[in-house]
Image (cartoon, rainbow, N blue to C red; front, side, top):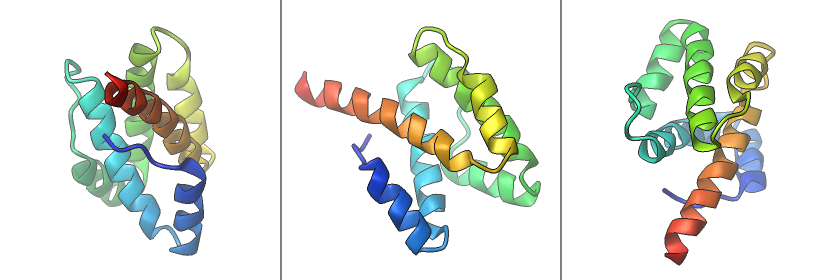
Length: 114
C-alpha cells in the first residue's frame, strides 16, 4: 500500500486526460484487496479495468457496489455502498477513488508507525 496525495492524483488525472486515473483505479483496487483479504471478491485492478472497459461501464457500477461493501467492512458500517453506486452512475467515480484513497492513506500511515 502506498500513501498517495489525493489532490495531486486528481491533478495528474486531469493533466493526463484520464491516463493517470486508470493507473490510480488499478492501484486503489489492489490496495483495497490487500486491506480486505478475507473478502471473496478479489478481482485484480487490471481485470476490473478491463471488465469495465469491455462492458461499457456496466461492470464499473458493480465494482462500485463491491468497493462500497469493502469500505463498509473497513469502517465497521456505514452506507458507502449506496454512495459509491450513486457517484459512479452520475459520472463522479473519481470521488470514489478519493474516498478509498483516504482510507488507504489512513491504514498505510498506521501500518508504517507500527
